[in-house]
Image 1: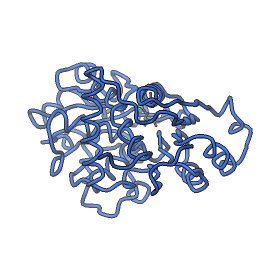
Image 2: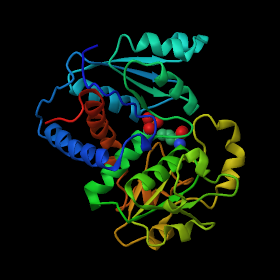
Image 3: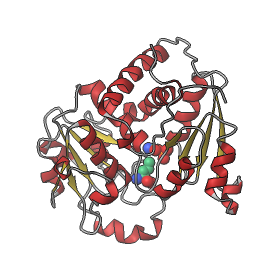
Image 4: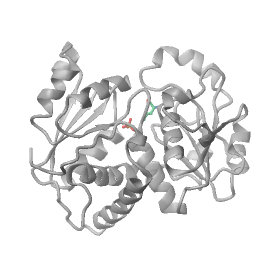
Length: 310
Ligand code: CP
Ligand code: NVA
């Protein structure tokens, strides 16, 4: 490990950073992305190592962190439950103590948020949430950057959430509270967001709608996610029945603002939570959104390891 930023910060949920830190991160993202697009080398993390621990599957999170770290001059170590002692019941606290003596940064994708919190409490280095049952802050960071890139400031705008009251929905609520916008949430009965689980203090940052079409009215951004998240596969049959009306289609997009964007964290299921005409249509920015995972996470890793640049 190299000496770095003296005030260690973890990124376990969206509200771990303040609005002015997000403004800084979005500006760093713009600079880092521009350099990347111009084939300019930018390697502030030479000799730094990121450990990535996956207890659930991933395509985007793995590729974006791994490619991003290499581009910044660092290296990565990839661990899964199946190929490490994590799958053989080594306590998470012991794993944290050991891994964090050897690397500079840890990203974890796991089940309960409490697990990543226990890891962070025993880690000598910053820990990043790469998705838990409760939150997915790196994804919302990318979504917000994508919105800003296409449309500018999100403050005061309406984001429509159509679907499960899951990790993505919870993180949108935290983002609304931190950055000052409103989320119109429509979920089937029994799958509502729980403000306590979402960890928000101000309930005025979201409004609940029984009808997904009404939630989309006037929205600047319409977004959704799979009906069945990882870890909930046993509920799939019941969910397919309950969520049938929560498919973002062209009627919902027509109810939104004329210049509304569509986002989905991916992977998507066309014909379930989103109609093909929407995700493959002109208002969809899902490919920019996926690419931006890498750019925002490069800015995040730079910030957690080096603090503010300049
Ligand atoms: N959106 C997202 O986190 O994708 P992966 O599950 O492929 O990492
Ligand atoms: N809500 C989904 C997001 C996948 C990126 C899940 O947790 O499986």
